[in-house]
Amino acid sequence: MLSKFQLVQAFTAIGIAIGAIAAPVFSANANPQQSSFTAPSAPQNAASPRRYGRKIALGAKVDTVSGAAETALVEHLIAKDVKFYGAYWCSHCQSQKSLFGAVAAAKLPYIECAADGENSQRQLCKDKDIKMFPTWVIDGKYFTGSKDLKELAELTGYKGSKNFKYKK
Image 1 (cartoon, one colour):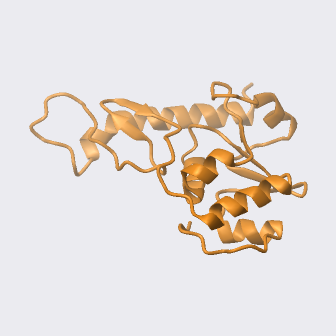
Image 2 (image 1 turned 60 degrees about the vertical axis):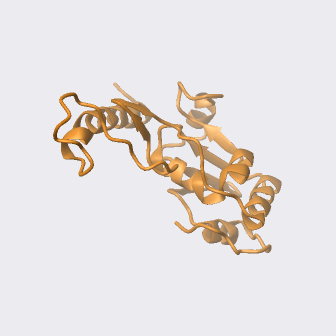
């Protein structure tokens, strides 16, 4: 019998495969003169997978800009021993990272839970009973779903500037 984690991975893979096939058919940008199934280019942002032909590159690079407030919040999260559990294929995790901007996102206390992800710590994720992505662990409490940076600041007692560039 498959674990919940394996089921989530399987359904996500199926959804990605369907999206890669259906995108050229349902996209408003699809060229009706095009004879092959080549997906149109997706918006180049971290919140959505980047499409090149029929292949989808997941774990897209964060292309937003970090400000001083985002960087200071990340430093605070590290000092508070906050953990951010996610998977490279999780679009919500990518959106969460993009709220911080590229420089701050690279410093996040991020733990990769996908077995085939870079620097995977799948066993740690299983040991911590991580069932959803993203999951934030703050002072031993689990918070699932992407969080606005102001919400993360409140949850962790951050007192610095809350002049964040991006909102959820």
